[in-house]
Image (cartoon, rainbow, N blue to C red; front, side, top):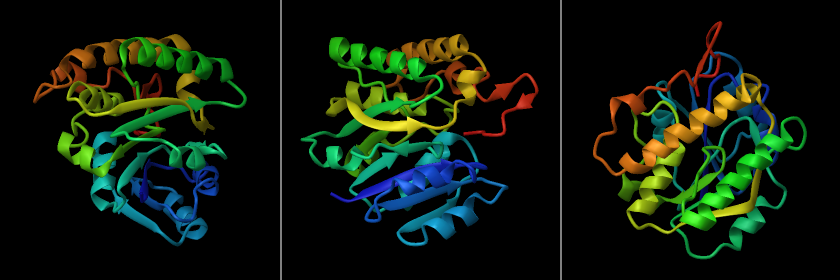
Amino acid sequence: MTISVIVPTKNEASNIPALLATLPPTVELVVCDASTDDTVAVITRLRPERTVIVQAPGTIAEARQRGARASSGDVLLFTDADVEFDAEYFDRLDRHGDWDALCGAKLSRGRFRGDYELMLSAQAVFYRCFGIAGASGSNMLITRRAFWELGGFRPRLRCNEDTELFLRANRRGFKTRFDEHLVVWANDHRRLERGRLMKAAHSFVRNFLLYFVCCRPRLPRLLEHDWGYWSTSNGPHRLLY
């Protein structure tokens, strides 16, 4: 099994070193970049081998899709620039059995630790009780075959493209799995700093609606809009991803 790690980046020069330090040298890294800072220079300096960098303007879904096209692995591992992989991550991944799509946990070692643990508990309940693997774009894997059979991400989705893909996979009969011990660690908590309740409500309502419409050829325009996901009171957030 060969793995391609696909990471969208926009001005992540300060975050990306921690992620790179936890990547095995054997995996392919595909960076989908839309930065105006030194992100690409930092990546090129720290990981010059087995790294592919593609320009990826547009939505987060379009960036991830472009990264998938540029990758070569049998398995596509989608993550974000502001996390790092647990020390046991790739060993645990090797021990997993048969699956088409697999997602894990996103936790924090310090600030907001309780918030991430609460989200993990909710993911575990939905998986155990309803068979729903609620994926995060920071920690989700899918085989190349399943990804292209599904058609990949919805390019017009500005957020929740990660969970929508897994909901669609599950409802179309692919083997979706959730492993709460397959962990990435979050290093950047700006969305939580903007409001815990807002983040939780935004995710729950959108994912609830996506569950019922994810298999439609075209999603409602209401869900294509981000509902302020990337906005702040002072204008657009610097990270459009």
